[in-house]
Image (cartoon, rainbow, N blue to C red):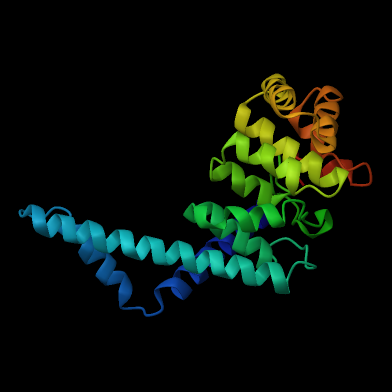
Length: 226
């Protein structure tokens, strides 16, 4: 329980750091609160101006986080520990719904957290150890974009598997993922990565099985509590 609470605090601190970096000055928060209050103004013009100001700040925040993700991908890719700089940046992308970071997330789709680095007592869900893929789930990525990534981006069986898992999260079932891929193969012709993806899908019973690492600690598999 103690470690779980600690992890929540760490996540909160990461988000707070992202917010402070985005807004720069402490005085900005009262300004945002002011804009929010002006949404209730009596004049329509004032409400519209407040909404526009909030939209601009939200866009700036998302763009800043997208830039941080790009930097962390360049400088911290080799650090696969829990709450590493890259892990925190990915978490921020998911929390802030940074759609501008889709391409950056695809580029690190098989970034995998070191299981030994996750504190004991944390309940991990399906896809937890592949945060970039999980963030794309949060962004509600279009299934067709995932299929396109399988075709043109996947350079290893591991990447194909992670992208295939992502596809099942967006289509809802293994069967619907197979149907989508086979339909694209029929329409556009065969593709080695798509063939692999279908083979992987037909070889498992559950989504999570696509992400099982035979060399990993079974006690830290997705869906279990450390």
